[in-house]
Length: 305
Image 1 (cartoon, one colour):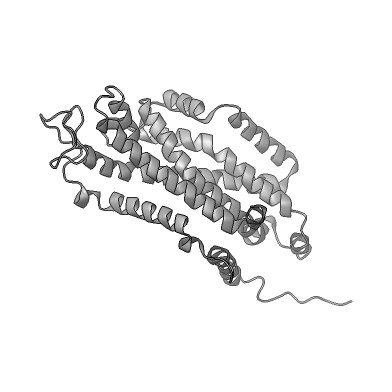
Image 2 (cartoon, rainbow, N blue to C red):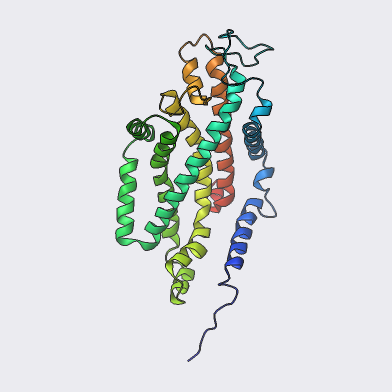
């Protein structure tokens, strides 16, 4: 009887992680005839915008000309040298509030997408790899969440638990995780019958190790693209909840609540236009970056175009 000696390298977790990292970096850098993501003009512009907003959020206390909560008698002042973006009804400087709003909206969007990706990714991996009853139960749960419009379900959850920042984040995670579960499950199902997974099972590789070493690295690409696109959606949904009074509570500087304040008197256009432009630039940048990553990480989509 011929014995097959195990490969001493294939089972090394450090080697597995290094190979996975090199594979994804290679896709991002592109081939010899294509440019990497960060050298594509549109994607580079999106990265520049996002990097600028991250710097603004990080150094807000140094950049903002005024305290975002400081009130003055100069209410509804139009844009001028003293207040570049004007002031709101309470005399608060809108530029300072837009700058500090980045410290709230962008980190919260990152937290929402990260939690939704973690929960949905784990459930999608289990549903796709285990199959049978687990797949059926988890997919029916996702169908139940998909049956409701995102914003309506988020409003209901936030109203039930109480309008504040923590409950708004919780509500958006609840309505966001099913899409990641579906994407990861689809990727896992497409590779579940591949030869390398069958060989791993024959060699005694457990399901947890197979998911971590073989399945996850080959299914994370679509999830990364989706997460990048969903970051813009998270910013929009958070702003929508704040616009309706179900997000961060006043007097916190949040872009959606600032737009809501400006909508009370549209003749004072600057109150809502500048936070609205902040939302627009961030959402557009995330969408453009996600589209560029999809072209790079999903070769089938790139060929289809």
